Image (cartoon, rainbow, N blue to C red; front, side, top):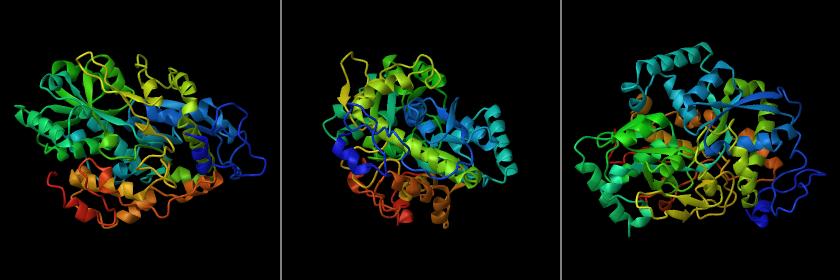
Amino acid sequence: MKRRQFLQYSTLTAAGLTFAACTNQGSTHFTQPAANFGKLEKTDLQIGIVSSMDCLPLVVAKEKGMFKKYGLNVTLVKQPTWDKGQEELHSGKLDAVQTLFAMPLWEYFSSKGGKSPEQDEEAPKSNRRRRKKEREESKSQGNANTIALMGLNINGNSISLSETAWKAGLRSRQAYNSLGEFQEGYNKFFHELKTPPEFAIAHPAAMANYTTRYWLGTMGIDAERDVKIKVLAPPDITAGLESGKVIGYATDEFFNQQTLADKKAFTASIDRDIWHGHPEKILASLDTWLKDNPITAKALMAAVLEACQFCDNQENVTALAPILGKSEYTDPGTNKNWQNILAGSYNYGGFDAKPQIQKLSDFQIFHFQSTKYLQSPNHANFLWHSHAVWVLTQMVRWNQQKLTDYPKNADGIIKQLYPVEGYAEVAKAFWLNMPKGQLKIEQPEMFVDRIAFDPNKPMEYLNGFELRA
């Protein structure tokens, strides 16, 4: 981020506040806290993270002393899955988590007794027993809700396909002369398959699941009939790609770059090209914890916000890779090609030994980067209620959690699960201008199919989809 862009977003906020002395132009590292929010209710925190690129702000806040600066002693606890992180959060073992943007909605409607076809119908009995236990534990704790505190990033996923698709002539989006040619080739391939192939995702509430379904639908491919979308762990995805059972997957980094390096897949599209600036991961806690620790929550958000700004400063890239590469944050054997992503280039992979590296500075944005879809005062950490409205339309579209109609009380639910008041106070301390309101219309050019999204008309938007459950 250039210095003039940074100063537009985060200026000195209190008497005596200065930037750390350094030669890096545009450094976002404060020598003092941006604000004193008051006496912390709790200082020792356990925060759950999943080994992925979007845990970077939390890792930076830990390694660069930002948590400590705000009076917090934080231990980052690596979780094997998104569900496990939520389980530990509800059990009280964790104070906060890095989680999926849609997780608050997912859990809220799950507590109503719903379930997901891609997660429950064909899931192993052990998984079904575990989820039943989680629901029972949630009930015993008074149905505490997961609450989004702030966004951690926007964009950041990719859709990759197996060598089988490559041999059939499919290529990455940029290899085609037009979107129509790309759509025609993919439609023909999927409809000529004798049986619907498996398509892997990390979790039904993952944004990669929703954007992939949207992407498939744009090409006339039915995500319910033409493919079998299933939750699979990385080792199962790799085995499925090798056997030919799995045709592709949608996920965040690091896994994808490792798979591409191993010549198991190629990237067909990145989700930024499906929906420019979509929400991705969030920092979240329980409403019960937030009620007991409001000051601590603000200090936590302040430290993470400062870290998000640090992550988007290109002059800090060389410092980011070794931090995130530590074993306590990154799974063993992870390919290091993801470091190139931080530097602004993306590897699409392939099976013809030709370089498929593209300049891509906005594959993932942690705070702000001036783009056509991200302009002041909008920034990646602001929780747009309209984003939650979009997710809810997709949950209804695909009948997740037994939702068949858009809830009449959706506005109240979203305000409860994605509050903005606490973050607004933190942002003010950083002299961040906040967007007016929480709903914004996504213009046609934001989506791959050039169809606008008006959050004020969710039912009209829903009725526009020909392909749905």
